[in-house]
Length: 290
Figure 1 (cartoon, rainbow, N blue to C red):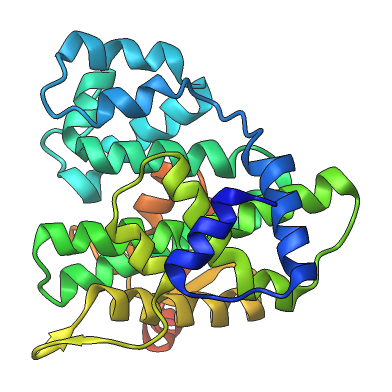
Figure 2: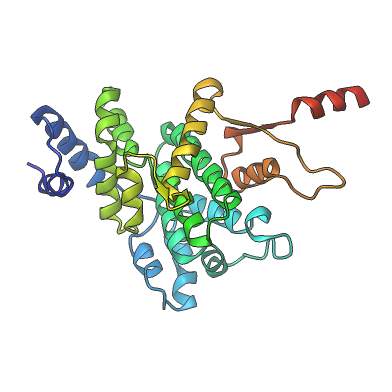
């Protein structure tokens, strides 16, 4: 019997049928316990220390897979995220971490480490980053404070984290898990991953919440994640990627929300999962001018 899963189930006050528990235990023992991500676990410990010396932070890049570092560098140098004036100057790992924030950098390292474990996880990465980027834009447009915007982005990014060990298990065991089983229990597997790697507690709420929620007179961060999730699921089901309609910058406009989405997807390396289409009126106008 898996004592860690038993403890989590007791904490959540959930009962699980014996066949499901046996399978969950097998996934935990064969995948989660044996995960080897593209970074040394000590990286997360250093990023938990707000008083860490810059030299210690800079040395972390040698403990992280180059592919992960490159995508973090792209994120930290995103024009939309951090402005044109300083774009491209986060050329040291310390600057990358300081610009993103230590906790967000830690979460991104874990997310990228997991998503890059197998090519079969790329579609899940595409939906997860779509939800995170769209959720961030919605939160900013709603006037959320920076801490709430961060919670939306990070929570949306890791909402389906528990599907990763399920997919890896299917590959490893040459089997196919029932979708009803995965849908019911991926939050539990996700919770086990969050605890294993010491992720912030607010992420657990993202995995476990069941209701659309308000905060006084505004939407809650969880509600914004739900809205982004609905849009992403609908778009991916129909097109296999996130498709939005938006004007793009022209000679008189520096940036639009559509160009913001393109910039963020390109920076993180998942450009193929987004398409920005011109509004019908503008597209027709472009044809007339030609």
